[in-house]
Image (cartoon, rainbow, N blue to C red; front, top):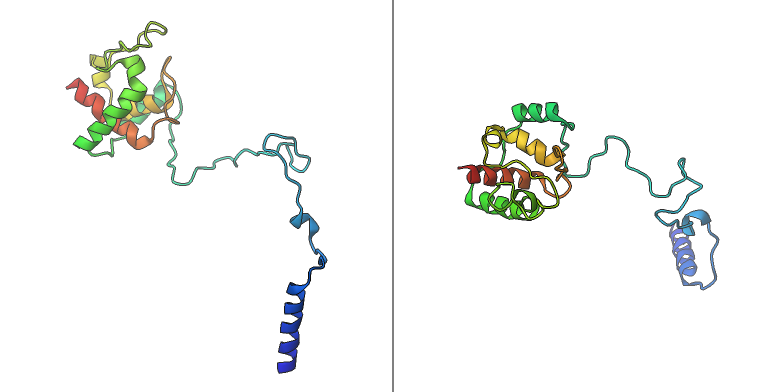
Length: 175
């Protein structure tokens, strides 16, 4: 038994100390072809190197927003969604900061629809008007997430938690 163990150890030491190249059992795994991200690839089904994620894939830590685009979905979101963020001074401060970055260009600093972009685009509705005051928080969240009329979606720019904080800040402007 000792002789067999000694022979194995001796073979392993001899194999590691040699400078001669060894035989490769899977050369394609050792020296695989590298493709550029946007270059054609003959190996994949669609011929593209960078493949799209599988249908229904959700990023780690992300929560899917299961409401589509349009006024019907916005009304449904208004009925079903409730602001989960507690209204605190810190939440209002964060909401004001995010509002200043993403909303002020069109809606203005006071939410009156008089932002600096207005000469270039049509005037958005005032966030202090009766129509905006009557919207449920979930519907406003949907509008920020999916967009409405000429306003595009801000879902990729503003996290869901920050969207709820912006809603708290808008409600404080309305009061």
